[in-house]
Image (cartoon, rainbow, N blue to C red; front, side, top):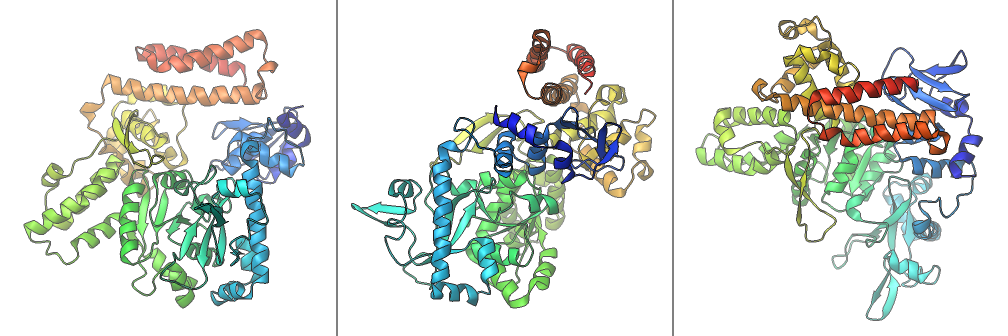
Length: 595
């Protein structure tokens, strides 16, 4: 029996989901509020007889493993592995995704325990941590350890070949020795809660030695792919919908110790593209709280420009020269004072403008041009045209220049067609050209759709089968009301709140009405149909056939393959009528499956 089947046989889906959702009996099923989308009327259904769930508000569904993967924001396979461990089910080598790397993860776990035991026996290391206000509970909580003074501590206790592969021992001139000597150690976890490497700090500052070291990069550890402080797979970041980015290990520990647990550190001063992308999957709100020294300021600038590419709402915190870093600040002034400063964080744009305009007379033309030139990098990385227009307007106000004259010098680079992305896996940072569609993320697709519905009410019927994200749901509902017209939309009363109103008009500035061609309408509609069919076909496989093609008859299998093929060829369709024909046929097929 396969691991999936063993799990589903062992898991009571009602009891399991009840850990996360408050369920009530409803006929032969159970109902509750969606854990994936805000709602007032329960539309989340669990069927014990079919051993599946369906969330009608977000159109998500599947078995207990699928539910766990969605709740934890991990892959289906990773969910199986975690649940197999929880339910004490043995995983065969073939099924275990981590089998290839398990020897590395196992060794790192054992090395971490070894460092922990070293720390328990070393008074000097313990005294150092106590001097920084870390007690035994903190040490256990964060898994802190100690690499001894011996050059052969790890060499004498673990497999040397694996240690060398992981960079925990160093080979130089035919000599082999431990990489960390007389240092406090910090385990670095990945998003799957596995130790992939270590950070280490010397006990006494020494000008001839680096204060901090990280494990050498290995088959399972690349600094640019990991963040220190992700102890819970990013759950707290998602819960708070915000993240605080700091520089050092002790900055993270100090904030976590003070219950500010949505804090992470980039491993090294500079944030990488991969790290920014990883964070963008957890939240779009970030506060950069790097040190206030020169290196920290330069890192803030680089990070702002990187985060811009991923559409973050960026804030920058200043410690007002009261401390060198967040760790020292909280130690001196406490958590409440830190939060007070955190709430005063300025916008990324304002931080850059203030930094670049410092000591300049902005009334002088030469100073204006200097600021414009320095702000070019910032504007060139903005991926959202609305944000671009907002900040261009603010720059025009600060420099007392017209938007048209600024636009001559600062132009929006359309990253939605041909863009250049850093291939950060290559040491030479060569540029790789990549083509993307104009709606490669749901946020942009929804914005374009709002524009279509605003300018052309005849399209309403075509979009009633689709669901918008929570953020834009209310605006979408309003636009789908057939009896509304442009004049009504222009009134505040049309919207539930001023925020929706303002947001909608920012979206209106995104594209001129004349640019909404038939081709534009066609491509937006095709994208919606593609996304709908893909999600629905996945649901059919998971919900109706329990992710097993063997449960399909030959006729059902052929029909399923037929629509998968149509989905793949959808973007090759020549006109919108062909797409609608495929889509309406598919809706009938979906209805037959009772999704």
